[in-house]
Length: 258
Image (tube, rainbow, N blue to C red; front, top):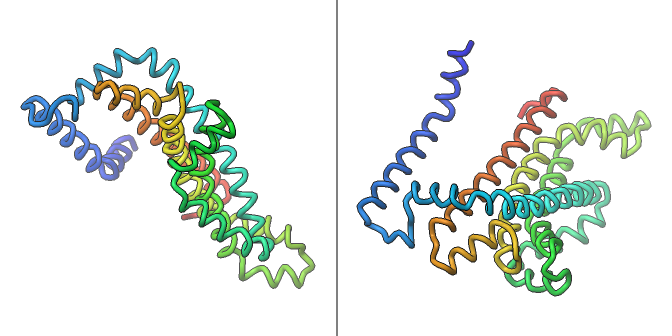
């Protein structure tokens, strides 16, 4: 059994792990040969050294600040996105009124909106959460709406003839098949939350990994900047995998296969 799991793991993730190792080795070798100046692209070992030297500041202050912004923004994005997507599915006039506005909201550059949020909320947590929300709620709305629209159509007429209400039809036959689409939106949203938090911290913050990386870039401390970028990437991957695990648990309990 253990051998079978090991073989499955190697088959699924072996090529990725090999690519990462080869990339890091080539990167380290290029830095050792000084093919690229260290202030432009530091060696992986230099980034790791900077991460260890700054671990108290990064893990004790900046990472928790970014994580707070990401989680608050994700919770708001998920709740509002699912409610709005469900409302648009249930009420066609709401869809026709709001869907164009949702698309328009995604065409406005966040860099242009961040100063507005700073004027509204100040240099507080909520200005960054507003940026995260605007970045991340759209995939949840679309995932919810598209999933509900494509699910349960074959049973709708039958249940209506049996006297079922629209809410019963929604709960029994439309929400379960829509879950894969919803979780696809949630996974995208979680990744976008990390991006939105970083942008908000870059443009107006005094804490967070985005703020730290901007300050290090201004001082040409590239190893410290890359250490913050590494933590941002790791944070996004861990939170993404958490949503993947949650999706697998919920879909298995409901007997839904992707």
